Length: 142
Image (cartoon, rainbow, N blue to C red; front, side, top):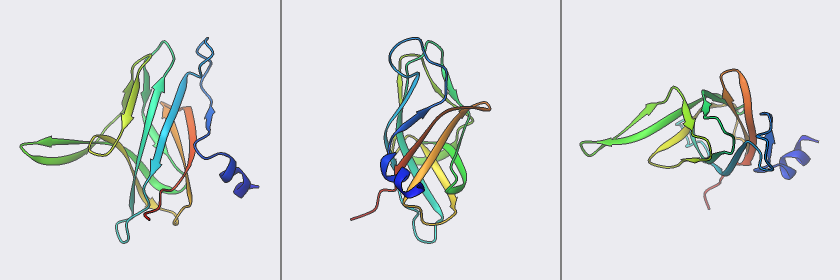
């Protein structure tokens, strides 16, 4: 059954947050991409768009994944011509806006892979509340 669900659910969102009162779900995640772990590095990166359709700011405090021992929110900045990556304590998505996690900017660092996953589940939390979970296939290099 799990394999069937993995085929049916790529990039399908499971919404746990309360309805925003309109037709749109309160939180939408799109364009999810997880890179495969680099050999010997034990890390992957995650990129996605998070849209907040609610009337309140959405504050993502942490992300988990059963396929990785640790997931952190990170941001890459360039200072004096040098790229630096630092962890973020939280990620704020203002009401009615979309925050893009992308290469060279805000992104997820997925560390200590449990195995070499074919698909990854990401669960985004605000405090202890699950806001959204998304499952996506791992992007493989051609």
